[in-house]
Image (tube, rainbow, N blue to C red; front, top):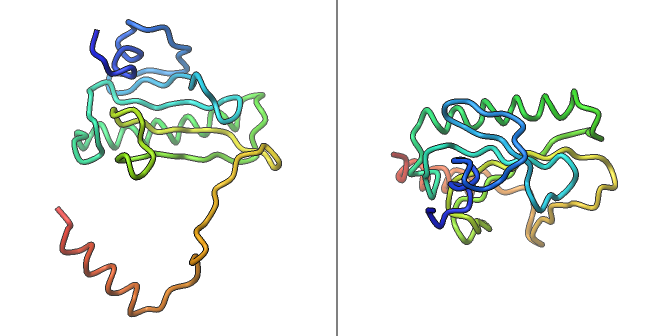
Length: 140
């Protein structure tokens, strides 16, 4: 078996609690959920990073993620909101190097939070314009 755990889950070599699958993606429950109902949307084709992901696989990843969010809201699981989380690269918190989208239901007081850095403030237009220019130069 490939040493990519998500590849094993997608291929069926490893056991998974599957919520949905199609020819490009597979959705299963996270084995270490943030909250009950936490799912992973995983492209069938192995791609370590977003930049490696086939464009149509990427589009399907988010289409299926949106459908997963709707399914959570329609389910009997507690769900007043939904978070998407995708870590791309080690510095972003990626631990498994096969692109995957976390989709998990949220309710007030569920214990999960996102903390903002101490310098989280509204930025000046020149600072934002400078950042936009740098991004434009890197656009592929």
